[in-house]
Length: 237
Image (cartoon, rainbow, N blue to C red; front, top):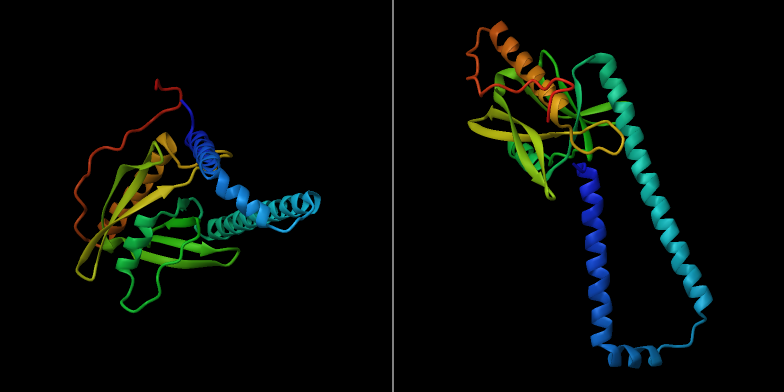
């Protein structure tokens, strides 16, 4: 079965091909208008124009690569810094619009909107669950003590044409009850979202910390939301 990253590449190639076909069709249909426009343009040598376009494309690709590299380096430095303090409690999340919108709903009135990087860090320790940005000096973007967490459950969402698991964390704050859809990132090369056994293991760990923290404070434990499957290596698909 193709991975989510492979499906993204196939979808992107298809969209580019469709766009190119539409462009060619438009040029054919408007051939006379295009010819009149070309005749009206001043004569320019093709060599310099082609070289300029190639150079601009190369610069754009280089800048995009540098930007992705810098973001990856910041994320790696942040994970190391958080891991040195919260060993075994750090996960990586994938930013999505629903999560940002719901975090904004939970933010203080008049405060600035939540700004998460494309790949942010999640710390689920004895104190609660928190979302982090920044680099070697991590910046806490949002945090919720366990007493504000109503329950945690696994669900799924659709990304492109693939179903991706999400950890849904329901927060109660200021009279509001809002579900945060947290998509976890797979750290392996060429992968997108965390799935199967590693995903369920992370959700189970969050639920265990949540229940232990509430029990330690003598608070009511959340209702059970159904068993989270344990997927063992070598199990049949």
